[in-house]
Image 1: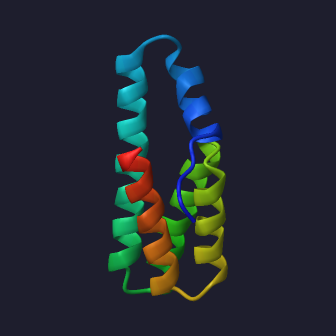
Image 2: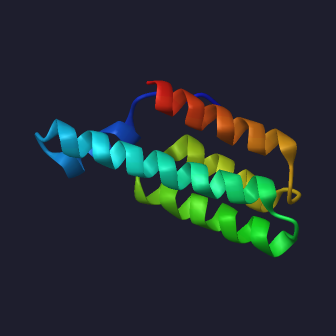
Length: 100
């Protein structure tokens, strides 16, 4: 699931108003927070840690209206902890978002 500009960028733009520096700062904060949760998911050694990081990622995605990331976090919660497929897709989404 690749990143496509849309509601996430619109949410960031609405929060930043006409301040491009604030937009960039919010975008970076979102990215860093999402990457932190992905890292925690990758390093989790128990179901509880996996679920906690996935719930935080889902909350972050919901807060910023990042629908594709919200769906991926939901898949992580519904699937098996440590699922490499969902980890790769979340990582790919974040890479695409960072590059956009």
